[in-house]
Length: 145
Image (cartoon, rainbow, N blue to C red; front, top):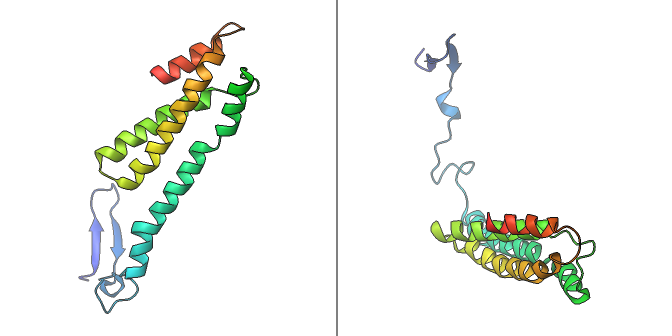
């Protein structure tokens, strides 16, 4: 009966039967619970580098549409709201990456900040002309918030 424990914090106690042989202990002889050095290398270096690549690709995905709108001097079908949200998001993630000293988060968001701020700077002048100015006010609200 030494391996039966009662959880008393619940209204009706639940009896849990725990077999001590099933609890992973770790160590060099237990291959099922210890991570190998190759697995740690993938987790600690290769996966974050892949994350930097995919994050940077996401930040640069609207570049062609933004620069086409800037060249045409017309927003057209381009929705500027996600560009403002992207700039706020990348700045927030950059601050987080710097505060926890995570070089992978910070590095990918430095490029994101540069790109998204460039998008906002390029699109903001196009939002003032014509219409009732709702797009401009919405974009300014997102960027200021």
